[in-house]
Image 1 (cartoon, helix red, strand yellow):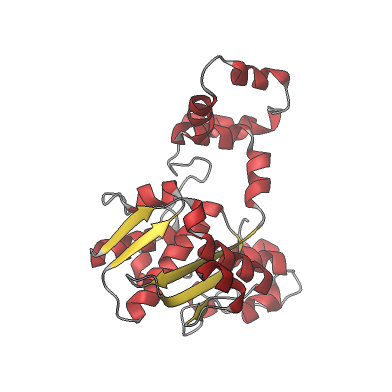
Image 2 (cartoon, rainbow, N blue to C red):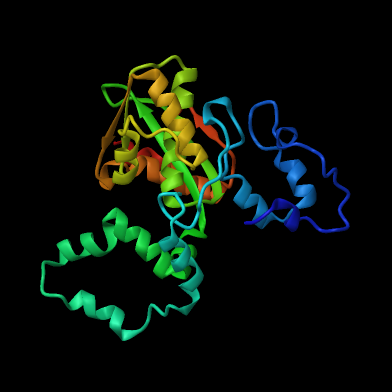
Length: 266
């Protein structure tokens, strides 16, 4: 998005010496009413997907956003500088898909394998940016050992990547359950990448703020387990997220299941 000051009209009366903490309400959420005085709604929808600073988030640090690892390399810088010269519609990009091997293996090697995903993100950035530029929302539900409803929640995130939206859901769920006094929880997610990262006890210094905060809370509690589940077992959370996309509201906590999802609870 670039420096926030570049999104504020020059005629706006603003204190250029104000601190970020002055834009956060007492409940720890962004003061969006104040932001709306100065910036457009499109900018607001980018701000709300970024969590305000919190002690659990650790110190800010400089990262290289042009690579998935967040670490600078000459290779990633070269790809970034040359990205406008690539045309993903050229026929020679289709040659690799004609290679005689099982389709599933080919898709994994060329698209889903983490190093390959980094290359594709640099080679065809426009398509990936367009995919990630849509509005995102998150949702989740907590149940007891018998499957009974404990609490549900959802949140509109504005412009946010699918990966970060999944992490947001887990962070919201953890904080809600901690506030209710729960300590031993099994967290289920249908995103394999998120499950693998949150199970990595050696990874804590991520450049993604919401991920860094989630990891630090999980590491401090030591009572949280992560389990990957198929998407068809996560339909309630998906429905709650879709509801938030239409509501466009901040965090909503539901002690009772809304009528819109009762059919999924049968």
